[in-house]
Length: 79
Image 1: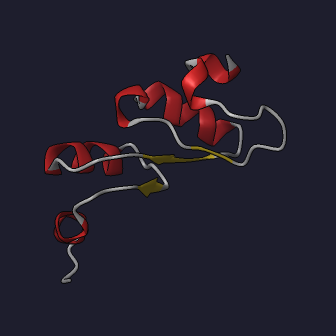
Image 2: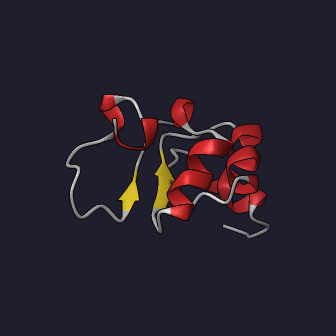
């Protein structure tokens, strides 16, 4: 698939400016390739603090979560 992604992460293959892969598909290599292509990566559904920290360290653009209080704490913000 596009950039070596599994088919479930794709959707349409034209005019893409962001991909939204499941957290289990997000690797440093994927983030690097997307950034090099000028694309953003938003991932879902991340509820574990260590995983939030890992993804932020990879410089993902967005994290979808069921636990906004945890991501706020990870980001150093109050809710």
